[in-house]
Length: 90
Length: 185
Ligand SMILES: [Zn+2]
Image 1 (cartoon, helix red, strand yellow):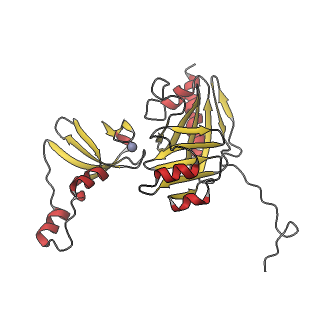
Image 2: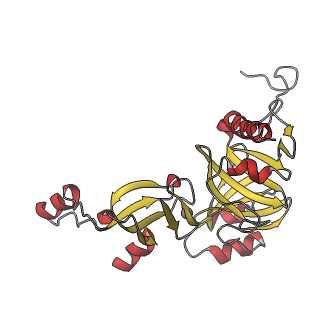
Image 3: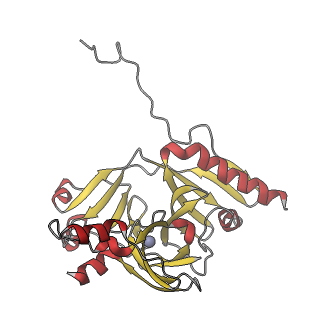
């Protein structure tokens, strides 16, 4: 598997560290309530299909990257700097 | 009380990271250590790139590139970070960027010769052939399992940087790849 780092270009999977669901970019407000926090901390979908994960280009430029990929076909659909994604959310 | 001066304290001699390990060579490829002098990482604060460039008197390189010449070189080092090689970074830059002395943190090696690409192909998971990785190009990747910063400094010449503490492993890994390639004739 190869991932396209927005800074470095396409690289081997071994250079990246996998973190998990990109939900970490949508941290609730401290007073959002138990349900929102329970959902944020514990609940994840496990889709057969398109998923959005956070990866880090650990052995490269150290950027955090949001990777949209298909868990069935292993196709990489999109990669974007997490900083850019977060900025666009706010 | 500690008495200072040559009568009381031995003169300390600096040893390079790969002291006693190099140079080494095989047919078509040689490996030696580089003395790069002062190394400083420069990470400009948000919105301060132009100010940093003005203070350095140099334009910062794009991702994956180097600028300047021997003794006054700036290389792309990581996301938003650059390495100044071979010169003192002016104190005035401190207010505009995070700067850290890296002089004793890295081991710098040079691999040279027409088989250097073939040796590196066994260790680095990036295409380093001249068609895609040209003179003055730089990138961060891995050498085996070690962190690596690599620059193509000439037609068949590469500069390799890894953590100083891993120098022995670095030399061993590259020497072994040189041996295995050599054995194939
Ligand atoms: Zn990268």
